[in-house]
Length: 281
Image (cartoon, rainbow, N blue to C red):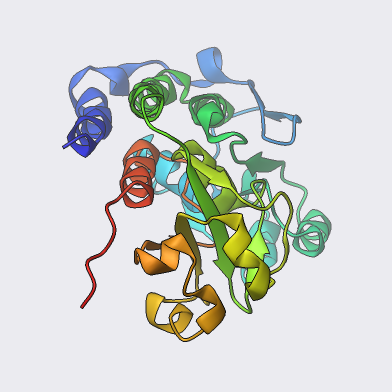
């Protein structure tokens, strides 16, 4: 199966970190600090010394920090706890998604004096750079480079496979029959997995107009997106290829985390988008 190559590539990250001696790379104040990195917002973030407390509100960044051996220093925040965790005077760095809501970002800037690091990749092909820069920010550049190299290899393998296949016409649909364009986090994932979004911007979904869009795969954004059973309840959707073929693909509204598992997640999505029709009954 074509997915095996990417899964093996992801596994190499753990092997490389465990067996190639990178844990002995110098990361002390004399070599890695002051650190300098450019985040997803294009801002340069600098730390004067190794961070003793990092507040992360991004799942991908949290996973990378753990891979870099910074589990003890990392505090995972929720939307409700973010400002409070960031306000802790020992916080050295706060990491948030690049798409963080403006209201949350404003509250955060008021709550903390720690640098705020925006984490994300647009397009997802830039994920290796995203991972590398985070590593540089926290003084783990060599270790992050190994992870980034494995992710780059996995993404390249997927891109080569997709180059031999026809793009799949995809509709991204979320709660309340809302359609989402290619710039949404889930839209970035669909594009990287060989899908072509049939809408260009986020918009309410007109069910009667969907038939003309020739949707081959219906991506149901979770939570709240439709199921095959619910879509089959609308007579106007009976002629939509994705509904006829049963090609309804669930996908998290937030897309996929930017971490070592990204190539495998995109490969699985590509497999689903290009899957054979589901046999009736």
